[in-house]
Image 1: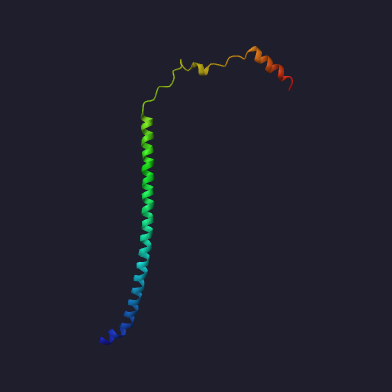
Image 2: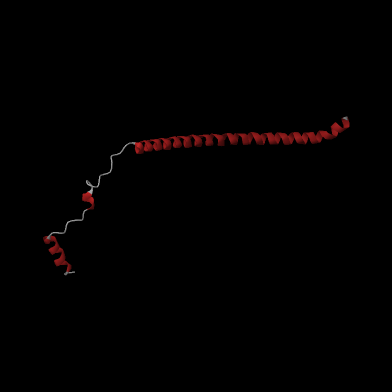
Amino acid sequence: MKIELQDLQPMLEARSEETDALTKIIEKESLEVDQVRKVVQADEAAANEAAMSSKAIKVCGNHILLRPHPAPPTPCSAHFLLRPLPAPTTFFSNIIFSNSTAF
């Protein structure tokens, strides 16, 4: 059994070195992950702030839309919008038509 342990010793040392190398890689990547996590958290905070701002705008807009508004004008009070324009006066029509032949 002692001979088997001595035979396995080089393999155990190689595995130990591999484990140490992997541990160093994991530590390095953990630092990188922490840096990325901080950036993501900052982005998340900014996105949450923007979402809260847009939600406030939405609530305010809905509040404005839900307020009672004055009724639209009745047909009697808006009839002036639909009536035809009056005919041009004789003075202006004479100027317009007399100059149209000159062109």
